[in-house]
Image 1: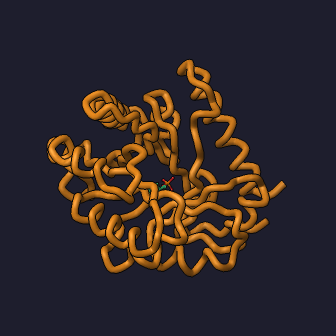
Image 2: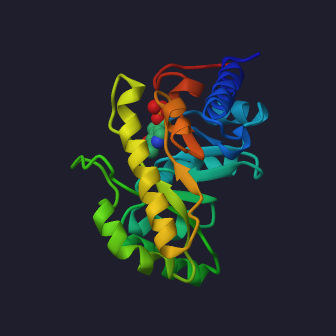
Image 3: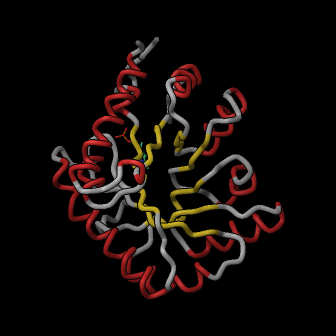
Length: 232
Ligand SMILES: *Cc1c(COP(=O)(O)O)cnc(C)c1O
């Protein structure tokens, strides 16, 4: 068995165990295999190993890889989306994780109308307040959520966050708790369920699942350290 497939199976087993430990149904938690910087061959191997969803953070890289891989493969854009890339990426992606301003949401909505699409998106929230991070300030999101949910084309399915980098997975827990609490608060206020919480990466996905994640984004734990070459 290849290293990628063995690691994928390990990750899925750890995800299931984390869900069960938290009293959750493992079927509620999806895995986005983060394939940024990875070769088309590595992605195909993971796909052949049963992995359906892949995440890229750069539009250009996503658009270069997508035509070389099976159409059944699902792409998520997990990184920052620039306005001038919206038109190209909308037809190719299943879910956009990083909608981080109302202006971007409006631009996506307008272009989606021109293309006849109803894009699914997550709103990225900067729950840590780190200046270097993209994402809505929670207070700004509270003010703008009504407008965002009223957009006719964009379908807001939930929230996403990136926890600050830390050696210890536990360090991320308060940020995951904050994202879920914000989602719960907004869902009640707007009477919209916003079911998806995209949180957790290689170093902290089990903690994220314990705190309610429904979509973990895992790169290095599947494909190895970036720079490490994995072959079948
Ligand atoms: C790269 C990336 C990941 C995956 O990180 P790993 O530590 O390699 O698992 C997850 N989310 C986003 C937004 C990323 O850019």
